[in-house]
Image (cartoon, rainbow, N blue to C red; front, side):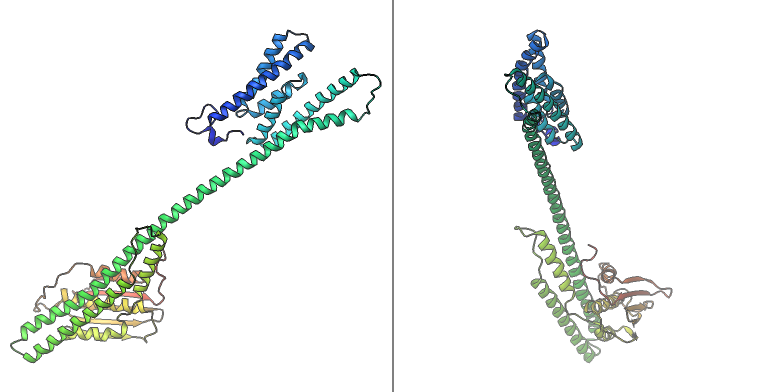
Length: 439
């Protein structure tokens, strides 16, 4: 078989041979062809009236052309056609036609050269048969069709098999190369899919960590902030007003129990929907799907909604803050995640008021607009006489609120007001995008 372009470009290839056995095969065929042509050249020299040594040398050089059949198959076929009248180079013609048909030469060139070789062999065969018949006894008188028909059969029997076999080998080689390229392409696609699955798994893990951080911040920061405020009030009125101290102590206990309840619910979800680690042969795609499903399921877990806003504001009132709740429009059936996000935004905004603006008046506005829910928490300037509760701040409250709202396709804005206070505004669409979109 002829060497492909990939074989010729292979590292360590010898000239145009990609493998050592290909070179050995071509050298052997060239030596056999050179010996055949040298013997036939001696006979041709006798007919042409030239020295036999010159004829043998000419035949040897002509037969050696077969050495370059893989590199220049057209040259080999043309040489075999040129020396056909001299009745030499039959092996070179057969091997040359096979190599030409199996190579990457355009089919039209192969058809033209195969036709030329067929005509040349047919003419030479017909002439030799007539000469042989003429040299026989006078009683043998073949019909006019005998010589051309027999010459045609001999020509087709000599040229058709190598051409057909070469076409078959070439088609088979091209098929194998296309299958190999397709396998390489599939391997690259699988590698890309594995990388994408790993990215999805990484994204799901990061999203789950951010969700846990937001939930922990909301649960712990708000409840504990109110507990600290009530504890400070309890300390202040413990001796002056025992009854009020008892009420504050009861509020602190209720808030602590609520915080523990929410923490237990969240930890229960994490235990049930834990994300498998990328180890031990777990498929990355399965990890990504499990992580995304865990995040989506955890996001839709039961939690406080819009109906709990009045109780949330009442807790802040009991802590000494002046909180007004204004509701506009009629409430609809919202997705659980929308209600919980709206609740958490208001909760975090009130927590920031307790931390950074104790004693300030707060207005909580909630507007139902059909396709979206809008909320705004605005506080006035802090009362200069109010004592600072000394609550720590990590600076993640506003970031967490914005992440929650943007994740649902909403808009979040926060900043100081002209009156010296602070305002937090958010608009959340009622239709919740599917988790994992845009990854």
